[in-house]
Image (cartoon, rainbow, N blue to C red; front, side, top):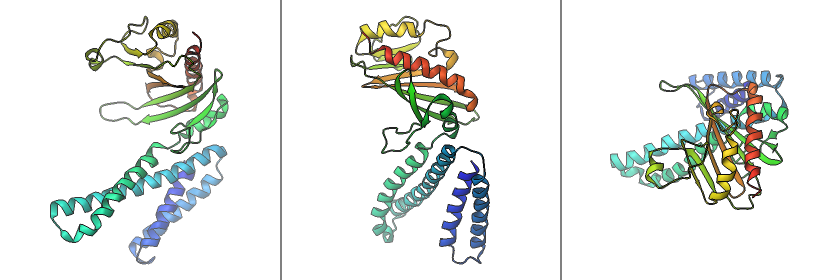
Length: 290
């Protein structure tokens, strides 16, 4: 992460120098210091032993992080202009209001892009060990927000990792999203999630053996009732609470599985991830057979 941090500091420091009234001013000296620290981190990162794919992901994350920071600043300024105009009744700001509104839309999109398309470097580091490669993460890519991609159980598969830091009310946790692309010749549409009050009030759901406490809705009930029970038959099934199974949504060729667990995910999670990939791809592929 030193390379990514260094790149961010160099970009921020350089931008500050361009905007500072003088390099000899207090602000200019601070920007020079930020740029120098960033350059040292870049130098250190360049000689680090991190794989090239990890360094590339760190660079992309740094640039996207910078976009998010700049976009957040634009959001703040835009909202201030709009609020001062409407609540302060300052007519001199009228010409700037349309620009502020347009800037808010652009900044919101930039902030979402900078945050949502971060690529998890632990998964990128782990990818070669499980036969995967870094995904082409981005809004214009079919890989979307996913971090790595490969083949599991004969199916094209993508994996995304989301981390949630600890807070006063909850411990640290992480979510894994596994997308398996399969033929789905029967056009199965399926949604499984923990059963809640809203599910009980919104009409009957499928009572699937071994899937108690889950809300199951599907268009092909006969096939779903045939395929789902065996998936939880084993006590070591990935779809048990032991592995943190949360939900499944299938539509078209995409079967998206979501797992969530307390704690921290690291490269030590190789066996855990391989287990999930094997069971998810097997269940998704089973719907290709009647």
